Length: 396
Image 1 (cartoon, rainbow, N blue to C red):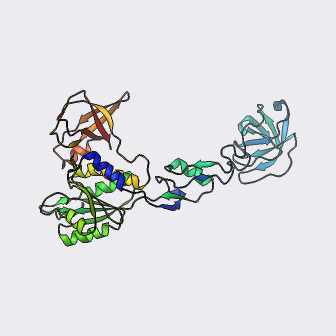
Image 2 (cartoon, rainbow, N blue to C red):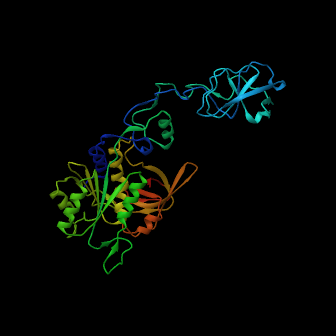
Image 3 (tube, rainbow, N blue to C red):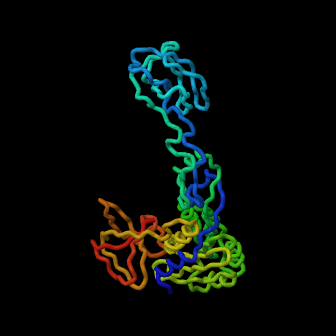
């Protein structure tokens, strides 16, 4: 049985960053950029109006005492090449190119119009309401560095620079396989001795929450032939998640079938509670995690280990779980020997976290998990954490 810290480090070391691919900008949120992005143009690419109003050459000291003649309109997408005299102006829309013979825009709400004559109600500073060419970004400027995590706020930047596709690190393709002859899918009639498949849906939701797509490849019955065929299908993916069948019972066939299928075991059994029977292995195409079948064990294994591997393979910078410290609100007792991840509610008050253990009947207690915000962490050498003492936790 392997130490928790060593197991986590092994996952981080063995998981390898995947190769880059080119994808449409619109689909790139959540990916890591694998190239430096430079702007091929000035932004804005021309001098433009920042307001709906009138463009003119600001030469007269007091425009409130005269009327200017409006000689036309410049809409967004148009371009006016004529000359505008000192007693003239031109109607202009937001984003439209500013005529060369003008330098200032007065907002329409600061004017009065009578026919073609425009009266100003206030004077403008020269250059008011004008966006200069390249004032946001100059041509050739580095706008996104390699290694950037693409966010929704980057999409407009990339698109405005004219990029349709960008090079990113590929995300791992994940397969989810459930095992157990007693498991059936929700919606079907439950017969004696059967239980509904909760882990499959939970693991898919956890992948989706990390912005990763996962394919559910079904339930394998507890027979060697059925399980071997299902594993063969799952090994075509970058990560295969197998729920159940990794303990020491007569029908826990997963470790043996993985070995027969060419999977090299890295470790099997970790000093954690729940989730001790967790299996981690690798093969020529990727990684395999065997997650214990009890829901809390499943959840803990994914939160700590699978998430680490997925982040490493996607080239994210912070791949390991974030452990924080908080104050325990009531005494917690455990049998020492394994690091305990216990369902808890986490509240924050004035930058201080407060941790309250949730009543739980063990690793099969789905209700306790549903009430929790995270896990209280009790280290393996501690049997009692008293109320008011500080301990670690992890949010989920």
